[in-house]
Length: 249
Length: 281
Image (cartoon, rainbow over all chains, first blue to last red; front, top):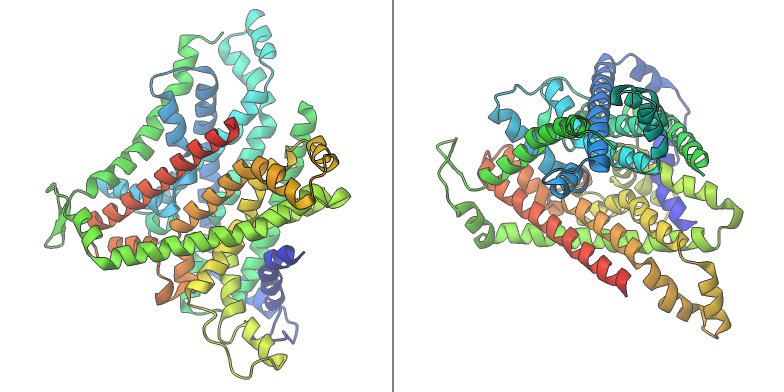
């Protein structure tokens, strides 16, 4: 129980003080107000950043899912030279500290003379998160019933038809689950973004910038909203996951 | 059953992509570490000076040691919190197990930055904790050492990685066959002995995985020190960051990064072999 208190204390404090008139700090919080939320909704810089983050996250989901799916198929079904190395390499961004992946990608951007902007952030997130897509989808493929694909091929469907009509629909839940996961991770990513960002801020970078100037309950307010949205996304993800498990068993 | 064309169609794009956008950048990092900066430009003059500087200038070793100390404390604290929690959930939670499990998972998805910020508001000298201490008349002046110290970094990272450590341990505990525990009890072992001889060894792979995760991720963290660490909480990744930023010495920064990378990979390799040997026993 103590551990739960420890885990939840910061979140509770954060939410409580987003409604506190006198700002962050002091005890107990008094004078309930929605003022900070009002200020937040009028703050165009924050909403620009939210939009940027959504764009990057949506792009990363598309990129990482496409390549992750192919990579998972390759690991599951093909054999090629360097397969063991490839398996490890794909997972590296998941294991290595974000700063190393971020800086490596920065060096690459400088190397190919690419200007730093949201596009580089999108490339960075998309590439780093292939790791997540591959792991999730590979697990999904392993549970898949191969007989259906064999039947489809035996009955004269082309591999292309089989892929679209059998493989992909069977992977639907894994794909949605992986997509949600990638989306959440991209929305929150900061270590890689830190080095690849140009002038336009993503939401975490905007918050980061403001933290350096000082703390206002407006940050508590946006954090509370982020918390609520993440919890909503996670519960969807979890529902899907249990449903997948039930379907399999 | 899959044709050659199918196989190359699915393998080639990810292979190429990962090769270009992942392997090449990591390779660039490696290559940079053997170059040098002259008159504000990176020159492709191959040398080992960067690595020599790392091992001869005491400041780098000092920061590295501090980083490892912080990472080790984080690992230890996360284990001390995560293991009992996993143990309780797996053996004693009963019907509330599913709900409690969810409760541990949820914070895992809450923004890293948001959690760091929350600790900042709690620990600051005009923060919530100091406000509370004065309100309860425990102290009369703000306690200053809470924020901007290695302690704050350890606290924040422990908070972030405890669920990460919990997960693999819980998974390992769940796979322990329950009849084994009954057998141990029937044969006269005390609960303590059952724990030491059966539960702990069987949960070791999970424990190792969790500990490695916490250690490796803390090792390369540069945001927590910036948020709550202050000057005394500077870690090795902050050195890298400043070398790539204000100090503009990319080659040296790359050399430090390569060291972090090697350390991480060595650690992963070590735990992997250790885990294998453990599961064969």
